[in-house]
Image (tube, rainbow, N blue to C red; front, side, top):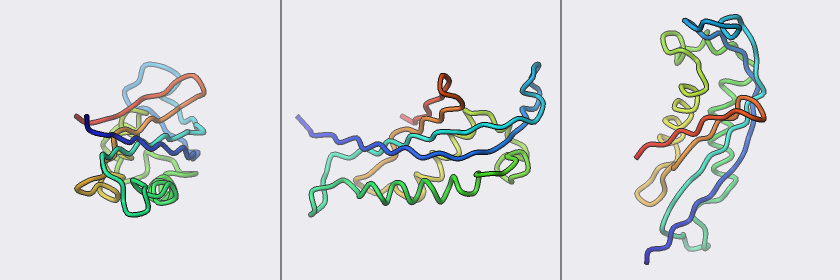
Length: 126
């Protein structure tokens, strides 16, 4: 049986957005205090006995979310055409983190983005 390790970190950021083509209140500008959960998987450990240091996952995640923090998402290049829904934001964070952290042995497994305490989206690629 092959070992598998899943590491998870949690960070947060605040931003506002407007959902285009949405038939309700969210078509008006509003904000969220987003919580971002990032899962990293690997079947191998490094010489120190870790997949990767948690602080490296947090740092990469904060670098990406700092570009979203206290911003109106619709103004950002990534969301000029793409609607800044929770689904699209989660996919964006996943793609950016994959570019920063994926190696031959380490892979971003999922990004879960919490819009509220009771509503989230989990994005993964298989």
